[in-house]
Amino acid sequence: MNAWEALGLKPRLALADGELEEKFRERMKGAHPDAGGGEGEFEAVQQARDLLADPGRRLEAWLKARGVEISHSGAVPPEVGEMFMRVGTATSGVDQWLEKGKATSSGLGKALWQKEGFQLKESVEQLIGEVEEWEERVTSRFALIEEQGDNEAALLARGELGFLRKWKAELRGRYGKLWEGLV
Image 1 (cartoon, one colour):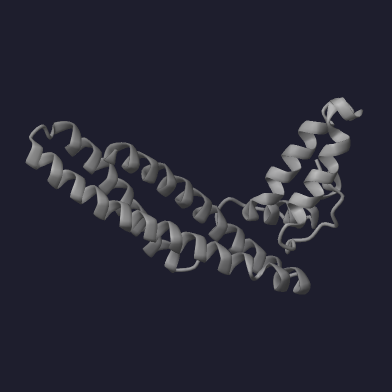
Image 2: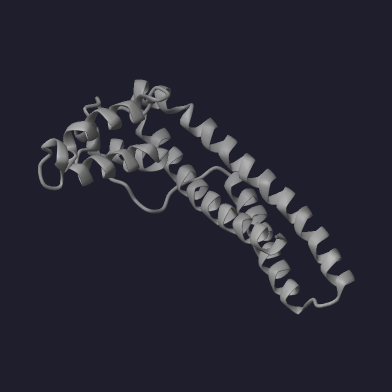
């Protein structure tokens, strides 16, 4: 499936704010079965939007469209290792905190446990913010990567975005579990 074609967009990495959603809404009007859309057209437009909304998947589709072979291993910047450790520490900290809460029964113990939970919540919030900022830094390079046709830079950015997507999902999942435990 050519996601850009499904949405009526020119294949490119750097999309203007709101452009993707605008094209999606336009295409959905005609793609919906009630509006005369063909079988599978509605789902294809939704899948195209989902693919292009994710910067890493958009980058991968762009590379594939250019005929670039994508391996699932490759170079990543050194800061990936540091963030990997920080995310791992935070997620395991939340898991341990949740287990500790199951074993805590006294009022004082619960109060101390909750205080620890709020501290964990702050650190997870901070990490989510850092991951999102990092993602913005990577996607801000899209226009230059595209302009220069720099496949090496694109592959490096793809590696970063893959880790960032995974970390964001893990951190948001733990954040939700923290809130469940705190309320």
